Amino acid sequence: MKTILITASTLSPVGIDTILSLKDFYRIICADVKSRNESISYYFCKQYYEVPLAKEATEYIDKIAKICDKEKVDIILPLTIEEIFVLLTNNDFFANKGIRIANGNDLDIITTCSDKWLTNKFLRNRGIHVPNAIPVFNTSDIKNNIEKLGYPEKRVVIKPRVTHGSRGFKIITSKESDLSLIIDTKPNDFHFINQDYFCDVLKNKNIRMLLMDYLEGDDYSVYIFCINGKPRIILPMKRLGLIPGMSTGGVLEKNEGIMSYVKEISRAFKFNGAVNLQLKDTPAGPLLYEINTRISATTVITRGTDINFPLCEALLSEGKDGHVDEHISRATILWGLKLHRIHREIYQYGDTFYEK
Image (cartoon, rainbow, N blue to C red; front, side, top):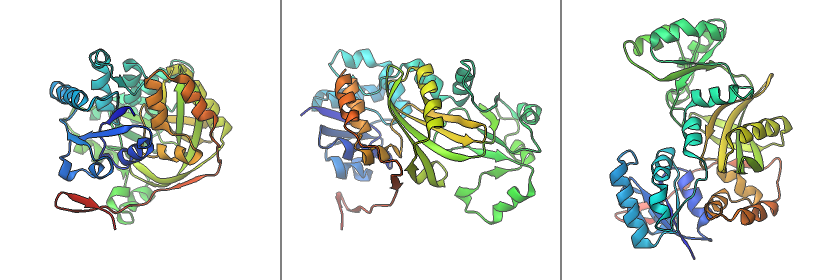
């Protein structure tokens, strides 16, 4: 049995879902910035290493390399974009050791998709329909450009260009009905904000953010697995029970308009491997607002169709395209399949983790 190293393994819930997806196919080693005593993934994999943050690139690569040598790792599957960047930058180093990095996308593609403005501009330049968007670098930029997107009559989204989990996402509005929600919602549900207040908070600060159309319509997370830009499978999930940064569930929906739109995007980027696209199905048609070139939190819904995305990612890294196609061809797509995300309790006493 080959050995796979899963990084960011404590990332919830994707880390545990990935371990469970691969445990029957590989010997699993886990790594994360948390100590073993703080990491729940240790309970699931039993072989665990603490590593530095990926931004400490030299120390991070050195530690990963030592783990690979000690555990005779064949494949590294990174679960965060930061680690994907660092590992792919050092791809030749690991390839010389016979170790594969399980992410088949080009670094330029990952860089573009990690920046919401570069993503928007890339697709717009190729004639693919995307929301109107304007990059801003200070509060003057916000004030000088927000009316181009219909403000104050319309709501306008503002968010960091490079982020994840809805961090920094706000909806700038002048509507009293929106702003009055501040007393009716929990703090982590509240996105609406007044323009003057927002600009006052960011006064005299340099920012890299994006003004974008506020999109009306159902929210979708679309899971695709591609080889050379051709999707082998497209699974649109209508997101249900949204909370900031993630959905608590969803339902698979055979939406031909979304599937056709996603094919266009996949061809434009020439994706390889597992990719998650987030979009709204608006009255004007599907409009993309974010791409994640990695396994994402609710990718686990694909297991409900008997498609194991982490396994496909590992197989693709080994050049086993035919095995990927065979695996996907055996799947039964259950349109209408629902995913319900629930909590699972793990107890810890001292160094021991257990369930009741």
